[in-house]
Length: 469
Image (cartoon, rainbow, N blue to C red; front, side, top):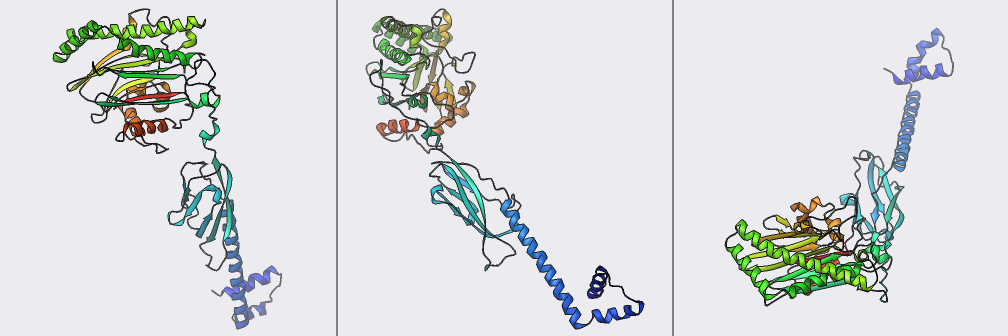
């Protein structure tokens, strides 16, 4: 088929130039004339060049208007975004390219991995310059440029003020407190940190803790308490509760202590129901007495202050622990929220020593200061007794920890969540904050305080955790 002849026929028809019958025999040789052939080829090539140029123009514009939504960054948090051209449907279009990022973003372009990464330094809206060429373009041709927006959020921690608690308030206590203690053959570290919600408004820490280890008896006592945020003197209520527990068990009569020791030896020798009931009865009596004494001491303080006992509302968790040859006897009392567990990583087990008191609505709980806590025998349900051969850690926590790390009360009974907590303590977290339990205890205790500063959206309450390891 003679393309030039067909083109001539269409051209003549377009320009309404009619052909007489005797002219038709002229068309074939005319189309084959060298000048006409060259002219047709030139026209054809010019048209193709125009089409190719148009395609390039539209492809460049398609790239420029293409939505490339970068994930938002956060100041001081590692950031990475991979450009997946196949997903963006640009794989067959983009040739050479590079990305320019403002120094303020803290990000760098890594071409071999098709990604930008780094740690954003400042919050705000930034523009990345995406310089590109089409696959059809040569090295000599200039890059085209597309702007891509990157939003970097402020570090949420930086939005919270950290105002010190005024030292002239009633019942002042330090905002953050740490403790460490050689606890028999074990080590004890405790950290208590004022929550961001309190720090933002220069309010005091409501949590408290106390501990002791009696060398002469081998008994250890650990107590943590969380004063109710809505109660104006709860910081003192939690303090009184913890201090009372320690003092109470320091002063148990020797005869009563000997009776308990005898019952323990009988139970460890022969773990019958009868021996368990005898031991449980003796221990429960002392634990309930201790908790009741704490309530009465709080009530006495309220009376002196001409205040209501509910102004001193507080939770209370405490444990007594003693080692007997190759076994540990642990007994506990728990009122309110928070949590306590005997965690064994090697056996993948946890024994949760009680059940948190959850109210009808979120944020509600029960308090030691409530009048009905000791109204009937149900108070004995708050006591647990456990004998274990070994454990990784005995952990007591206020709800500033459990709300953030366990989310729900039911999760307290899931070994997976305790494994996650232990891994978190050992550095598996977004801050890479590690509590190294192999270090000298002073260093470990300080690392715990650093770990307590973790970020958890919506969880800004006081945080207290005691770890016996």
